[in-house]
Amino acid sequence: MNDIKLALLGSEGAGKSAVLVRFLTKRFIGEYASNTNSLYQKRLSIDGRQLNLEVFDPCSQSGESRCILEEPLDWADGFVVVYTISDRTSFLNAKNILAQIKESRRETCKGEVPICLVGNKQDLCHSRQVSEEEGRSLAQENKCIFQEVSAAENYLEISNLFTKLIRHVMEQLKHR
Ligand code: GDP
Ligand code: MG
Image 1: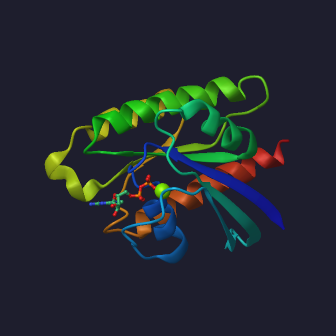
Image 2: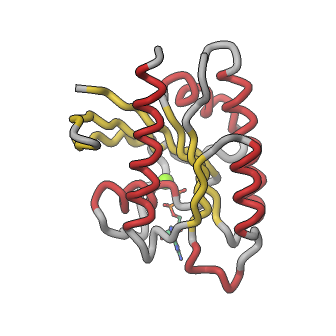
């Protein structure tokens, strides 16, 4: 059985927990206890392989970002970086987080770090502050998988995104 460890990163309120819980339960649950770090586990099968997925969903990283970031950075095999398309600040924060992941992995990691960049709250496109194009080009610069999603309205895109990321992680783990 393969162990796969993912960490969610992004501004407080970007929808990290909503995206993750949507993936794990297929449901949208609007609010979570946002003051605790959570570790979720799920058994799943991808391409006929049994996996033990562990996902770290940290509480707020804004402000004192660095010290909270370091732990998941060392631990995780792959990352889901979430911003909100209607909140430019969360996009800039995602940009910083991608830079920090790169920096921290430079010495340790041989291949690419599997990351997906997620523009969440696509249903709020009437108050969009970040274009899809900006998201896509940030992802390209950092060699990330990219997708805009709505945790509130959609399951399939989120599920496909996690599947892609997990495949990428399995590829990388093979080479270690
Ligand atoms: P986190 O701090 O990044 O874990 O963010 P949460 O998952 O707690 O979500 C923050 C707020 O955004 C909550 O009130 C959610 O209900 C809301 N939210 C999350 N995803 C979406 C979405 O796709 N669309 C909309 N409209 N609201 C969302
Ligand atoms: Mg949360």
